[in-house]
Image 1 (spheres, rainbow, N blue to C red):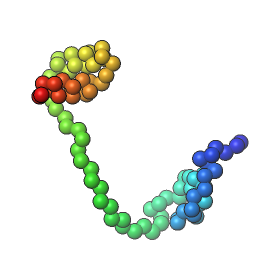
Image 2: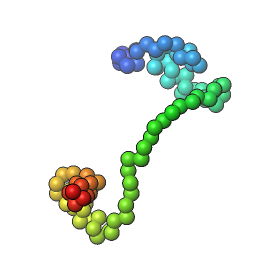
Image 3: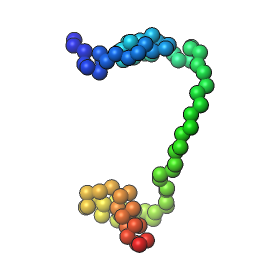
Image 4: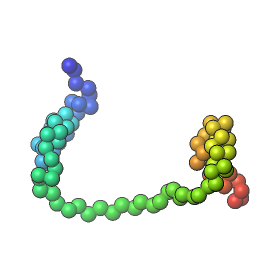
Length: 89
């Protein structure tokens, strides 16, 4: 069987598995458990901001919203955002 380009891609040597390719790394971690190896804490700053807000919508209103969104070929979330944008202008 011929290997794909991605499977042949060379890595530097992986610090734990000593793998030189993605295939070798996958083989290693497929048969080893990371909890058996020493790890060190890593400090990371992640700036995650909530992008979704959940609102309670009356079930009958939600059915109408969903039907209208389907008719327009868009998601109900997109339609709700459009309606809110228009009404708050």
